[in-house]
Length: 561
Image (cartoon, rainbow, N blue to C red; front, top):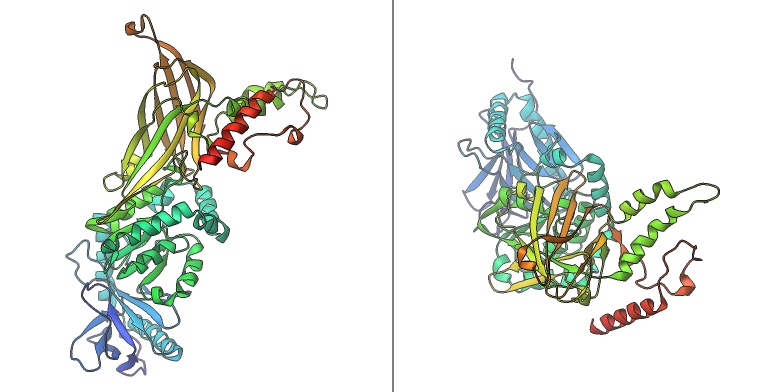
């Protein structure tokens, strides 16, 4: 069957301000005007870019080309339109080399002289794309689909570059929908981005790590994994990056576009892509990955898995990762005030006559529930009763599956005679730049960040003597709510005469959900009597001497900070 005939001219031309080839590391923006020509040659509809005073150029097959423009989607032989700015677009075409499994699309940045020219070009692009379908470019579609399926079979990369899958992705298969919805809703709000931006320890350290290592960014392709507001993408552009792809799955991508567009000197070299790292495709490999994937206890929210997936999919061999390495630090602590505070919460359920109702059947469950919450706050490092140890996570080497479970053996030697109430944890990360190696830490005693520290509190404390050995296990198991179940066991080995004969003196364990922490920083550290509710007879009383001691510790800690 012959394709329907049209009255379209054999070719149409547009004069553009400039065109930059993204896939060529040595291709500068064209210095003279560029002519874009739509034409049909041997039943193949092409878009050709050529400098007006040159015979050289390159072609795009419109049956698989994409012009990235916001809010206009043409589902015609995989052609799409997404806008980057009023005068700037990206045109991406699927590679024609089917023999290369990992071949990427060719991409160009197009700049127009005015908005009318931009609109006319987009209308023409859509018209010619539709005409390509009408002409029955079935062979091109067949070859494209073959490469599509072959790529899926061999490498799991099942989409043309710059597009997002409509099918269930790897992320969706391991994360429950309700958790993902809440997660992306949270990070899609400006107030939460502001909270992170106002963490000046965090933001300042990232800025310093990038600027101190300009040689790692200058002239390089950078991918910002989970870009949020786009602040790290702009840091990379400030450091001289050739182009930055800011990938963000939440609605924050729209705000990032607006913020970046308001910084025109940087906007030329930043492309915001709304989608998940697991789903999108990029037109070129990255020289540098930058991201802020850390959660509470480093691994909460399971963003680190996405970070290493981005490494495997997009990072060039010998590429850089900022950050490069993470460490989880652990140490036993003693904090009577915190322990009594948590135990007191469950005492509400000890009432035998609450408006005529006996609440005591639920006391055990309530007590267990409160002690299953990790405590997030900033504490005085003098509460630690032994030197800390750490577990290393190398982002350049870890496989995604290795994040599903962590099993960390614990071994400490107590420095003082006290009661151990649990395990305190914090993390740090290394930016291993070529010029400067910079550490970022959330340690107690260091400037406080929005991560604070985390403490796993035992419902049964352990008594230790100075010099006594503590052993145990910290076991983290990932779950589909983008977090981890924590299983902690601590044991005190026999100490003193006969200790060499072995044996465990005391053991205490707890199971906690990292997804449901107790954010203690929203509460005062000490409770003045005037702010306390009337005490019930069954409440555990806190002596005034204890309160004075805690207040003194706080004053000393504040003075140190």
